[in-house]
Length: 489
Image (cartoon, rainbow, N blue to C red; front, top):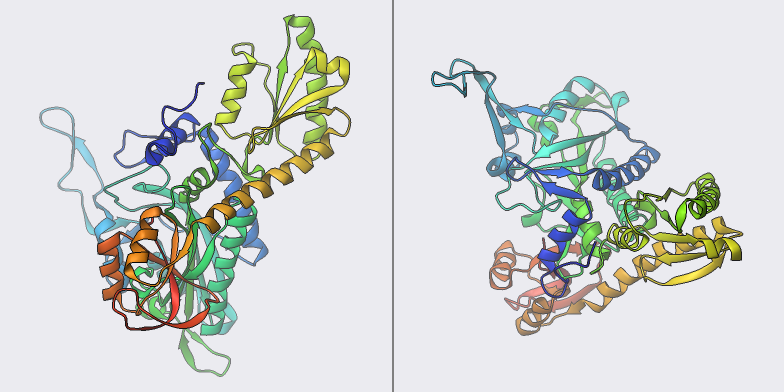
């Protein structure tokens, strides 16, 4: 397998691209800006999807599916929304091809759609048009729907998982009788995302509100989880939006209240995407390859037999299968790799590259001694253990690895979180990379000016933020709290 050509310190961006491709997560496709998610990458996404899906259902949500195509007229109904997405919409104008006069295929000019269709960049409009038919009275509320789908945003500069023209995601869309319920839902879902990021992805996040300038198009409030990658850049990893009554008014969705009056419905929407795959790679991996948290690793344990000749292999295979059965019975995903096409050293490097948390090497000498050699991916430590009690050993090890990966990322974030009291300090910290807490006067004008000067954006105004009087680092105007800045993906 060999080491990487590029180390993180040399060129983080190049390291990331090489790792995604070499670890068989994804590759660029024949379609500009779109990726192929390969089986190993998709297996990780499935683990994420299944964990999140359970969390959604545990909080009372149900799954549905809505159309990929949205009539163009729907977008013009909510002004902020159309403005936010107009520049990245893919549009379907025709519905038929025909044989060209000079051979080849061409679009049939007679098959023009009466109304163009937008390939969904997000589904608020089609869903709220649908909810109009579902909602008549307070008895029909709340509606707590989620859909697992693909969306298209016509990005010009693309990067595997982080920014592609088409990506996979889930989008929750909820309808409520009161403002309070919709706000509570928005908060609940950002907490679900933070819980998932920290307990499954082993990635510490900061929860907060987006500024008016960074809010979702058509939302009154956007909550976000922000994570810090190993190059000191932030990555927005999930968002939850309080939409107020904007979409209900745009699509005339009213309900009869208990008191017999008519009111517009209150809404939320929330989503995470395959961008989380990029976050997972960048938050934990090293110069040897992926480092996967055990809870999301498609293969948690790999057993590599060490043998000479068929006779030894048969004995090692028997012992390996016994270990495998015991681990599988405990709900641990395990692979026994007895391919004779590759040597053990090659296999070790491959599983290191692919981030498999635990590797067991089992040879003829181990059989004699009743032992096994176990290597853990996070620290690359190797130790010899007795074979009895293998399940308990592996369970403890997987828990320890999951926790250790989280603590390492948390330590990195703490070491790369700074406070700045003026522009000189701010510029110095931003250049180093990391989160910077600083006072801001609350205006979009100042926010954009700081971005223009330093490339740093306000990632969020943290939830439960400390209130303290101070002065904006740029204008010197009064400020009641520090906000979190960083350069971001």
